[in-house]
Figure 1 (spheres, rainbow, N blue to C red):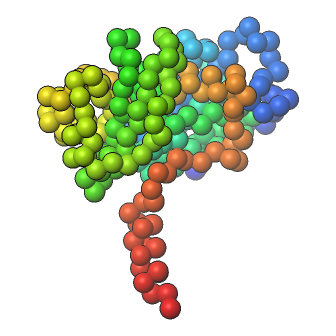
Figure 2 (spheres, rainbow, N blue to C red):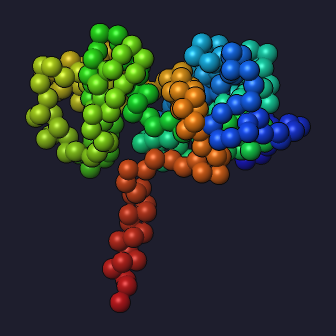
Length: 261
């Protein structure tokens, strides 16, 4: 927490908007966006002027997010001669993903948004993965390891060059059953391919590994679209998307429910 305080020290808290999700500045002026993607063991940061990427950072997967996140944000801003107070929108991936990674990213965004008055966009992880697909992909299944031989699965259809539609709500499926329903017409991406891509590839199109991880640039671009649609969130309401409870929480529930009279 002390690093987050240092990052925003000296910033006068000054809300920039008159209503939720819309800025008071001239709409033709590019919006400076800081985007955080911390749903995995690594992650990334991006700084954008509207949809144009100014700079990016890849977070070290071998180090904890809490150790690397704030120094990398500081470095990214300094490299582009920007200050935290200049960020008008902070967009963050909300999951599904690593419980710890999501909590660290969201706590950082809450702190910065409260201190700077920046607007906040909560961007689910799977639409970011769909948005990052190659141009020749029209429909895609996004997967992530849900443990217990299960997968988080999302299905998307391209509407146009920049728009994707979710054709089925995010769900949990048995990994073996999911693989059996694949066909040659399907394309698959996502971090869930790690370790199983060799068994999946004979059944369908597996995108190249550079598309498997969500990228902060797409968090920022989708966050901007949310804000333009009036779908920004308060920093107080920002919450991770947990499709299921953590193993520790489920263990606690099982222990206490069995102990109940």
